[in-house]
Image (cartoon, rainbow, N blue to C red; front, side, top):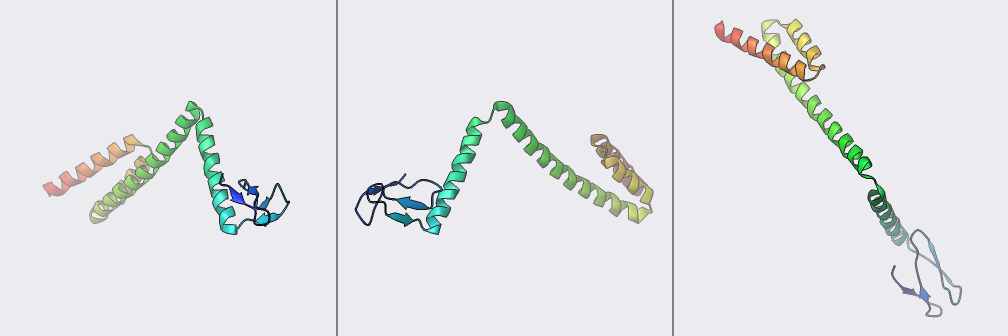
Length: 133
């Protein structure tokens, strides 16, 4: 903590985090901290608490937190992939009147990796058919 001096007697004032009023230990004069100073101290206090939580976190808690973050990222990536594949199937399907193929492809996408393989095979078959005609 920083050391301040009392304007009344010159004694040392020791500010504490989160406390808005400083009181001189020698003469009892009270001083108000500025709102900016209080806000900065609260931000510092929150940062220190977060660091303390991080230090006290067990290895399994860290692994769980990291796993949840990876799952969220994988979900976002899968959703983006699903949208791209659905758009490709929709583009090809609308030209050939293959609305049922598009619906089946979307349904199979929701089943996971197997759905992705099915969609890839369907797209490959469509491309082959288009090249033969």
